[in-house]
Length: 230
Image (cartoon, rainbow, N blue to C red; front, side, top):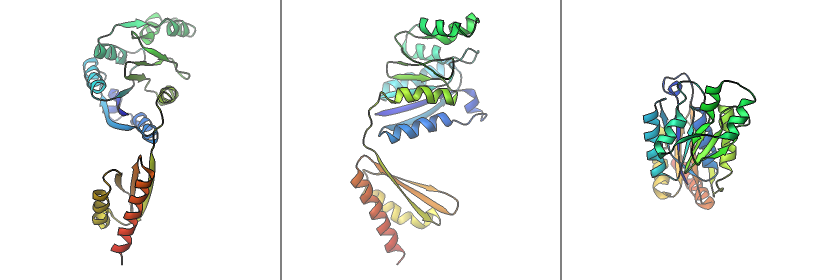
């Protein structure tokens, strides 16, 4: 399946917070054999969130949204999701009654428990705001521990597909392996090959759905490197 991750929050755009949520979800989706086609960061603005969500849900298989589910003025994600899908926000009675056990702030309780009509509730075991799925969109809290808790339950709904990965480390600089890298990329277009320069060495990652093709690509790359050094 093709996924899009949309992270909501001004704090991500102004550099106050590192977007670890997107990295966490993308890694686990890829390990399960799915593709992440876009990672998008948007401000706490209803119209901008709604525009990106509507477009992503139309063009891709599934959309994952994190952030903006609390009770403060800048928590506007639920409103934006409802706008994107042309749905009404309705108070989920189960969430409402649950939150009343911990707070008597009616405004906060009603805001957190108001989610788009027709949503499937995903309980948040470590925080107040629940996650939910509506159509092909899953919406989760932005606090990392809460996102991880709810994302684990959502991820279970998607089957595990074939995925294999192997890495090769080469000492030196990327420029020294360009010819060999370009050759193996052209010969194995069905294998994803990424080159990641580090300080003093390079990691080349080979991945794909066909284990044998991934292994053959790695073998071919090693062979090319060996021949180049003779």
